[in-house]
Length: 113
Length: 124
Image (cartoon, rainbow over all chains, first blue to last red; front, side):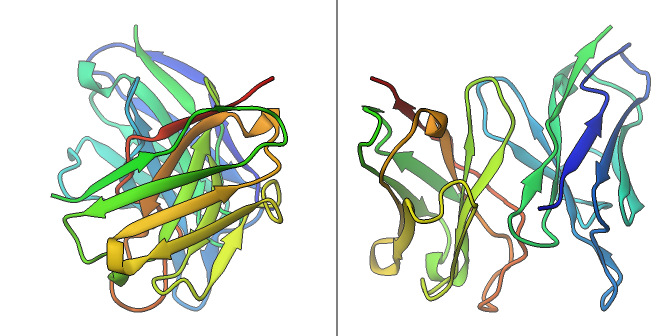
């Protein structure tokens, strides 16, 4: 199975500042035939189901604010929130869909400092 | 509006069985593969199962293979998860989720959107 490891486990950032969450996969999730990274990011607020933010490592879903961006390739990925807003307090999880079993990182809890 | 509504979660004894349902609306159900994903209380997400648009292909995580069976009834826009030989470690909020890839007979493997979940508690 591909193991997904996020860092840090928790993060406190001041409003308006940048938040960076890292995700590392135990093997590459870059599919060479189409040069796509099979990596998604989700946001989960308390009491709510996860919400898809980013797919293919860097493609922001419709309606997701532009302050959210994804980057990286192969085994190392980053979710960046450029200017933290109060409504961004949540747990963020990465997920690989390169192969079954599809696997998630353990989640990173983002709070306001 | 796309909606996924899970039901069937209850408290069940170890070794027991349960059938979860997911009612889909707001989209052409048989255009999409579907997934079950679970989340133990206070913990992270775990993918459980995938079923293709026609039910002809299914995949399971190692932790549930042989005990859980995913199925669907496209005439009723419904997804199911039959859970047998339940264990304490199966205690979780179970979400159904749609695969985003439409109408190709295939799937991507990520999840959008998700239902609100139904809670399964396995306890004596």
